[in-house]
Amino acid sequence: MSLLDLIQNEDSQTLPEKYKKLSIPEMEERVRTIKDKFGSKLFIPGHHYQKDEVIQFADVTGDSLKLAQVSAKNKEAEYIVFCGVHFMAETADILTGNEQKVILPDMRAGCSMADMADINQTERGWKVMQENFGDTILPLTYVNSTAAIKSFVGQNGGATVTSSNARKMLEWAFTQKERILFLPDQHLGRNTAYDLGVPLDKMAIWNPITDTFEYDGDPEAVKVILWKGHCSVHENFTVNNIEQVRKSKSDVNIIVHPECSREVVALSDYCGSTKYIIETISKAQAGTKWAVGTEMNLVNRLTNQHADKEVFSLNPHMCPCLTMNRIDLPHLLWTLETLNEGEINNQIIVEKSVSKNAMIALERMLQRA
Image (cartoon, rainbow, N blue to C red; front, top):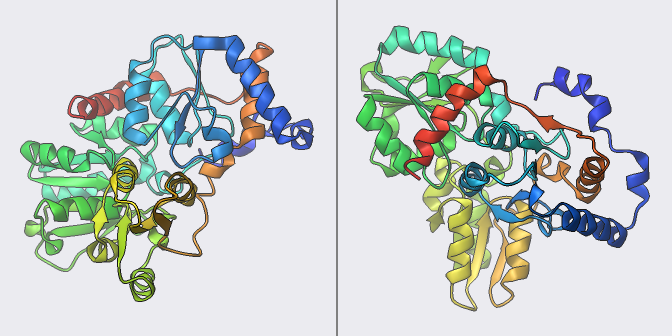
């Protein structure tokens, strides 16, 4: 959501002062009461990066892929209160029926990565890429992108990907076209392509700010074009973090998300999606040590859930994702009480002209998930 959109919607997103004065037990009890009243008409999906105070009320928790799958299958809920960020709520609106209403408790819950690729930049860059490479490129977009970008990708024969299925989707894409445009996260694109055997010197970066390629080699050798975007959280895990952890704990296991840089992934012991990280630590032997390179809310939850292991953040100074943290208990309660009064705040509506092709991109992914 753009700054202008936020300003225009300020009244609909401002938390009433009375909710700031409520105690946590009172808010929790009121949420439970409304959930019980609505029953199956209300569905609350929650992303793993959400705060514990919110995730406790989620009907299902998961990463982007799981929540997309669950949203697509849910036909019963009239109201879907999405505890995640804006692009996830957009995806839910695209995948659910016209009679279902998707609501985001706080419209400020955006994603800096998704904001790094807008549709104007993408269409402008695509034109240059077509001029340079002709009809040899298939676009793929991480689900951490706007509905407009998903629509663009669907219209041009491509698909969405998540960190769980990026490898599978990239393999499929190479059966369709000679080259891949991967947006908006350069790190997930680079790490996935590298794992598939694409050399780093065959990957070019597209800079949407300067409208130029960042590449010194032979253009004909390019196999993957990486959009110059990143996750503000995962880019804060560094080689220095790894060196410091290994010095202090020689027997530590380092596990990171593929949104981390190539250098960090190369020096880690394990790399995978949010789901992979959770499952790997859950299955690990008691007494093992794990330095985790992903969002802090999830790391803290893993620490609390696995007292028989030593689980901590790879970066000791890491903070939770600021935009994910916009969804908190007061905003969730406000959203539910507004619904209980027969009104809807912060409904997410993707225009039909956009959702049609975005749905195509999502379905291409879900068919292979």
